[in-house]
Each structure stands twice: as C-alpha cells, then as structure tokens.
Length: 524
Ligand code: HEM
Image: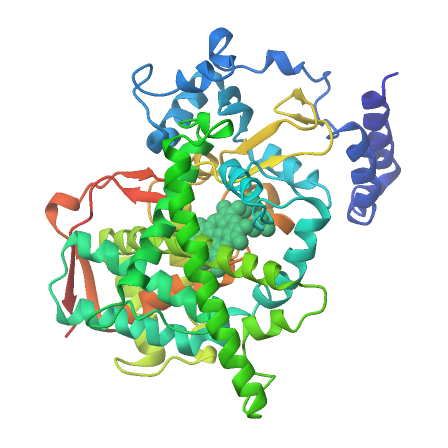
C-alpha cells in the first residue's frame, strides 16, 4: 500500500471511529500527515500525474516562447487582460490549468483547492513575487524587500510589522490624520470641476498622503496649491516601479535576468528615486523624533510606527527603512486604483449608494466628526466594499504560492515547488448567486453560505490569506472606507453616459481601460 492510500485509510478509520465531530481537535494530526504526503483525497481514485493537467501543451510549455505565445499577436490577450485569458482557459480546460506564465505554473479556481493550498503553505509561506526587485537588491547589495524575503529573514521583519499593523485597531490609531487627508481630497471634489485624468491623479495623491502619515510621520504636501515637485516625482516613480515589476511578472520582460534591459533600466531609475526620497523622509522623521525625545516632548504611547520600530531591538535601520519603503510602494497604487473601482460600483448602483450614505448620515450627519466608535458601526459600508472586491477584484492573479510539500489539487499530483496561482476572481463569479450583481446585503445575511463554507470564504481574498497576507490590509480598508465616508457625506457619485459600461484591465491593479468620467454633485 502506498503512503497516499495509507493516509486515506487513517482518515476513513478516524471517521468510522466517530471522530468526524471532533475532527477539529485532530486537524493538527491530519495536517501533519498530509504535509508529509500531500492533501488527503476525498475521492476514491488515485491522483492523476502532473503531466496530465490540461492546458496549452507542446511548444506552449517551452521556456520563453511559451510565455510569449499567451499574448498578442498569438492570442487576442495582453498581460492587462490576463483575467479574460484565464476565463477562456477555464472554459476550455476546467478549473485546474497548467501553463507557462514567465515560468511554468498551475492555475487553480476551485475553492476546495484554494483551501488545500493555504492548509499546506507551511510556516514561511512563499509566493511567486517580483523577481526584478530581488535582482535589483542583489545588484545593489541591498536586503530584499519584505514582499521578496523568504524564510526566517522574512519572519524577522514580518513579526514586528504584524504587531503594529495587523491588529484590529492598528489603523484606527491613524483615523485622525487619515481623516484630514480625506477632507483635503473631498474639498477639491466639492469645489472644482475635476476631469477624469485629474481624478486619477487625486486618488494617487490621496493614497500617497494617507500612507505617508503612517510610514514617514508626516504629509507630503501633494494637496497644496503648489505641490512640491519632489513629492510629485516620488509618486510617479512609485507608479513606474509597479508597472515595470508587472511587466516582468507576466513574462513581458525576461532579459533583465542577464543584463540591464529597457524595463530594468526604468525600474532602476524609478525605484532608485523612491528609495532616495523615502530614506530622506525617514531621516527627517527620525531627526524630529530625536529632538522631541531630548525636549521631553515625546509621548511614548502615541501611535508612532517609525518610533516604535526604531526602538525595537534586533531591527537594524536598514530593516526599518526596508519596511517603510515597502509600505509606501505597496500602499499607493493599490489603494489609489481601487478607490476608483469602489466609486464606480457605488455610482452604478445608486440605490446601494443611498443606503451607504444613509448609514453615514445617520451616524455623523452632514458635518459630524468621525470617531472610532462611529466608524466601527458602519457595517453596510464595510459590506459594500467587500462586495465591490468580489465583483471587481483588485488584482487578477496576485495570490500565488509555492508549497514546501506535494499536494493533490483538482485530482492531480502537484510536486512541491510548483508555482500555484489562485484564480479567486474567477471562483468568486462561479460560486455565488447572481454573481454579476452588486449586493452588499449578501455579506450581512447570517444564513449566507460563505459563513458556513470556509472554502467558499476563500474565494474573496483581495488581500491574500494566511500569515503572508497583505501587511497593509487594515490601512487599505480604512483609507477606502474613509474616502467613501467623506465623499458620500457631501456628494452624490454618478458616471457620465460614456463611462456607463467601463471595462477594467490589470496594470497590475484593476484600472479602467479609459479614465472614468465621474460626476460629483452636492447632495441637498
Ligand atoms: C486595495 C489595496 C490593496 C490590495 C488589493 C493589496 C493586495 C495585496 C495582496 C494580494 C498581497 C499578497 C498577499 C498574499 O500573497 O497572500 C499583498 C501583499 C502586501 N501588501 Fe498589500 N494590498 C493593498 C494595499 C496595501 C497597503 C495600503 C499596504 C501598506 C500599508 C500594503 C502592503 C503590502 C505588503 C508589505 C505586502 C507583502 C507582505 C509579505 O510578503 O509579507 N498593501 N497585498
């Protein structure tokens, strides 16, 4: 009897012995067993071999060429429309597909498989990340950024980050300064005629200012009448850094591995600038902290991420800078772009928008100050954002894992080390009722099936899942909630007719394929 059969037999004996109810307490044993042999199959048959996984075959799996063949002119897709290509492959081959995307990979869309991946990710989860950032770090003799670090080195940066950023109230400490940023943003929308391009730019400024109060202890002046050119360039450089990484991730740039090709040169320039400016802000914040300490003016209890990290034993200045730069980089484009998606869903669903507004006005009135207590009561707003994430995912295939053990997914044997992309955006359309409707209520209903079915719950994971999930999640959500609160308190969001059927593409975050023409009008 092979090991796999043995494990299945152990499981079925446990069930026969009446352990089904209490299996929760024996999960560790099962996980231990499964981590040595792979997922325990619930099907009766042997798993099929890796080579049997369906997908584009032959030359399509060859290095380099295989990746190129996925996109125009060989197909009608580009990396920006990868989600549509994944839909086509799903239709053709089913929920488990093997293909070459930069490197050979398997894409899974079944909730149970997504669950299996997370159950087997191990102590130091590994994702297929921005390889170009690691190459940059190596060539410049720098520590990898937190999103690239692996194993214990990752854990030693992630743990102090978790303690300060991932607690339920971590972002609430910054509600005050982030509300001021939201006020500045809404003031412009309420008083100026804002073009679609300008709105995009304002969203970037909003996200950038919001994260700067956390990472650099201060504002960047991007909403000033004459914004500092250095801050504008900083923001642009963060955007370019993301774009170049996105190209490499999807196999659009390969040469950077061996020489400084055009994509790499652009990354070098933009990321070099991001680092330089960020290090300047950190040095400035640190100096002001030292002055306050000497003058006895620092309240050690105040929310002050930088101070608290700099005071932590075992974290070098380079590590603190690494974390802050990552927060700024990861926290700008992502949130800026998703603000527009959220506004779009609210604009396209005026009845739901009015429900969100009613909740806000009932708690705050038209001019009331936002407190943490009132913010926590805004449950419909939070359901609306979650539903927005389900309907239009912020990323196409951002959650990936490379597992330390063999597993069985979709009935196929997957060897340890395979790159696995979790196609949750597809699953969140296939497994919900009325999947193309914007229904925040589905997240409020007690009987909602997702609350019972943990696997289905894993289909809407805009921030990933598990110990390696998004470190800025609490801040991203707070910033998106705040933007909506402040806008809806004063304005009605609508879209002009030409933006009524907007398509979203991925660069690498969800981006309208042409700038959306929003209409913001004062509410009576
Ligand atoms: C709408 C906004 C955002 C989205 C959709 C988003 C999404 C994600 C996703 C999908 C991951 C990978 C998770 C995984 O593999 O399980 C991630 C990682 C990460 N995100 Fe976010 N994010 C957002 C905003 C932010 C913000 C505001 C920050 C910083 C304050 C941030 C910092 C990070 C960092 C540092 C990582 C890497 C974590 C690690 O490797 O340990 N993100 N994000």
